[in-house]
Structures are given as structure tokens and as C-alpha cells.
Length: 88
Image (tube, rainbow, N blue to C red):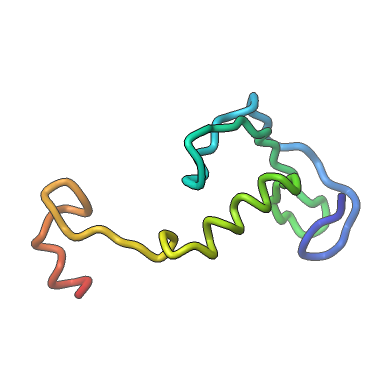
């Protein structure tokens, strides 16, 4: 694996978590994926090596109509309706 920024091959594992559920929103089943972060020894960029399966699922989410949906203001999000004047 190479750094996505500078192509350096010296990466150090800086974070590792047991496989974790990631809800992808495209099916009822949830799957576990590894979470391992690496840091480049040259430019200090931190990245995760994402497997092809997860990459495909995330791409489906980002390209779907649901990826662009938002919710209205309420008492429970971002401080309530009074913040609508700041956000528009």
C-alpha cells in the first residue's frame, strides 16, 4: 500500500479496531469491516485501506438519491429551529 498523497511506501499503523458494523443503507443486512488507519512517514497523511466490497457499497450510497436528502430543523438537531435564520 502507498500513501494516497505522496506515494511513499512507508506507512505505520496508528489505529486498529475490531471489525465494526457499518450501516450502508442499501440493504437490511449489516456487515462488519476492519478499521485500520495508517500514517505516512513522509507527509503524515492518515488513510485507511478500503477493500473493494466496501468501496462499491459506499459508492452506491454516494450516487443514490438518498445521499442528498436532509431533514428539517426541530428541537433535537443543531439547537432547534432558531438556528434556521443562520443557515437559511
